[in-house]
Length: 208
Image (cartoon, rainbow, N blue to C red; front, side, top):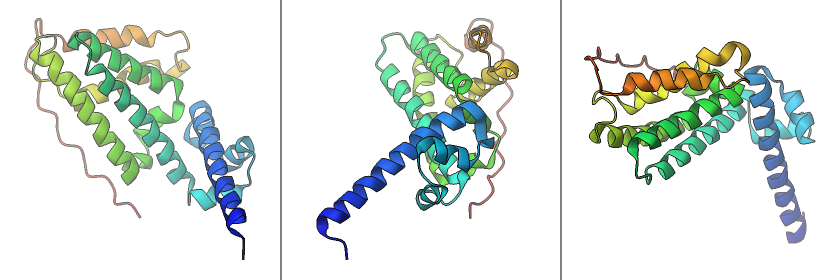
């Protein structure tokens, strides 16, 4: 039976391995998307594949943890921007941060069209992010900066649209900013016409 000091050392090693794993996975998923192998992630982290699976049962659950962290990072940025005195500028900065994240992280953009989005951890993080987007959108709408029928969900979907416009080359030139500003101009209240209602999303498949 291990001594208390040995137990403490084993726990510290496990924490370090998990941190190294998450850092390596974040980097690998950003560069290569969801196709990256567990072997590559383990090699980057300097650990064995078995250690990876002791922390995450599947590659999908590891990807879900990374995507949820990314969503929470963007939500934190949005909460900070809620303190900005200019609601229009705050919303545009939030959307700029969101598209920049999509463009820099291949897996983040892919996650919207894979089973990862159905993971409960990702669902919860996505709900938190949508709530922040609703708050930012509401402020800008009340100030008359954008049309009144735009929702936070609309804004989140348009981040993905701007990302897809830049997807063929992962847009290292930054041309995505052109598409983002074009999208943002469509949010403005001047000359706005009524939008058709947004249909509900289809139910996500149940998780195992």
